[in-house]
View 1: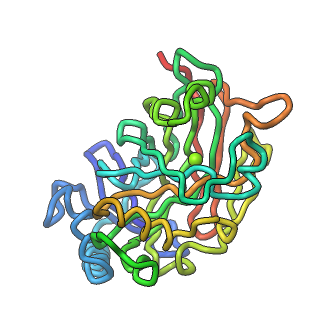
View 2 (view 1 turned 180 degrees about the horizontal axis):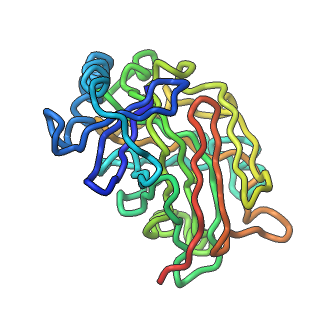
View 3 (view 1 turned 45 degrees about the vertical axis):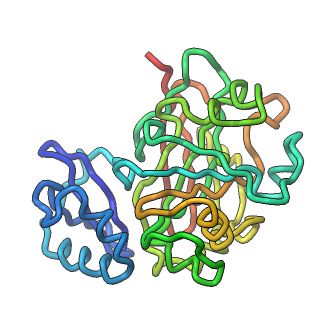
Length: 288
Ligand code: MG
């Protein structure tokens, strides 16, 4: 099942589509039995919660998505935990060393934009770079989760573009500032439930395209720390809650390591595709 949040002229809708269909059915979140919290509640309950949500949405009206704006699939994630340097070839193209443990930084919800919305190049920089990534979404809450049980806590996956303001990011060893400008984290277009993908989202081809040119080619089987390891490691430190997002890292081919460097410009179009998840496309605009 694919789950999306759509902004239509009559409000925000929670919508679902089966695999292999372009038909989206959904209710305005205000009309859902559990309101806007419906998705988070369903995620928290695991597969039975998602099955109940699916049953409810099956009877919903078909939505006209032609005028829809695609919102990030999770309304306000409590945590967005991002992993840096998680593909060996990407680390090699940079001047960083390969970390022996997951290299974690955080994003905040104000950075998120949905499919089709512009990524914003901030006033202070011209160095906005792309990073196509697999993101996993936590369902059942967990703390001190073992690697063996970690995937029971993953409700689904989506595509993420961890757009990075490189000059600000590279000023210091901590990356928080370069990764938290508003509207620099594209997330979507929808959540695909874990049952529709290989365990841990492994073995999925990933590509990033800038203005029709392929810039990144990778496969999630090359993650150094896989999804199960990331869930276990992060849950050793902090509770993971429904709707939390783990952004797993980007493969080689980013813009700042190229000669000459390639950065995204206003008017550009950037597209990230992941097998089984779809295509996340965003334009670039300057901060007003
Ligand atoms: Mg990244």
